[in-house]
Length: 335
Image (tube, rainbow, N blue to C red):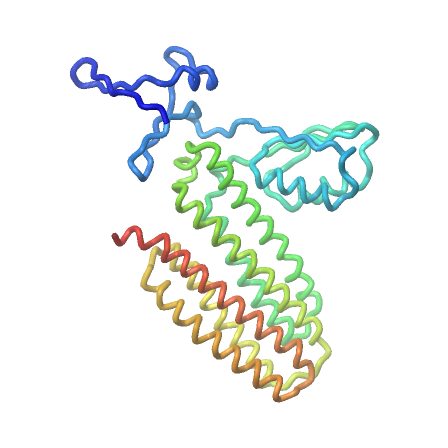
């Protein structure tokens, strides 16, 4: 840390000189504007990035060091999440078909990524999304809506024996992953450019909470996929009405807790979040009791039915994690 003394000029203006090394590195000249951001802890951030624009960061992948489509796709996702806005894929020879498939899969499963240039030896992918156009809260709300819809449709598909709907539920998990990767990317962009915080309408502390909760919602989506897979295995099993009723009730109860936990964050309702944590404990105990009862009953498809209840229990537990995160953030406003 450098210590600078505050100077007073004209009797009312307070001036602090800026380090020459920083001035040169930032290419700042006389009369150039800089941004000054007051942070929640009372400190100041001085930045040359006054328009909230993301500086160009380029990541180059040489296919000579890749042995297949999977590792290339994962690397592209990693570069995307890390905040690179230009990704170049180069090859000493002609770019193989598996690389083209990975690039196509990548652009389809991310937000704002498009191929801007392509030759036999090079592919350039650029980010066309303005970070301020996708607020954290809107993305997280959308994730919650998708996941809740997936679970409702999975249970409905089991009840109506709709295999096509089951497959659609499983595919929708890609949309959840897509939005989670976007939240992670937006957070990393904000870490590198603090002026984005104002443009996106959140401070870094709240952005971190959104990142943590989006990861939880993404995991809930994974458990809903397991519900759908269990429902698919039960598609041709004759189930008693009481079993279907149990599945519907437990699904409805887990979704109530899940959706209410997200609402407690968006509505800044710390009391609601606290009540939900108690609700989760009760819900988990009931699910455990039902699981034991099912295995004692020995009905057809008992393993898959048990997996459904088990995954509803996990959805409820994750809802408790969301409520805890909401309390951890909201409690500071009560002090």
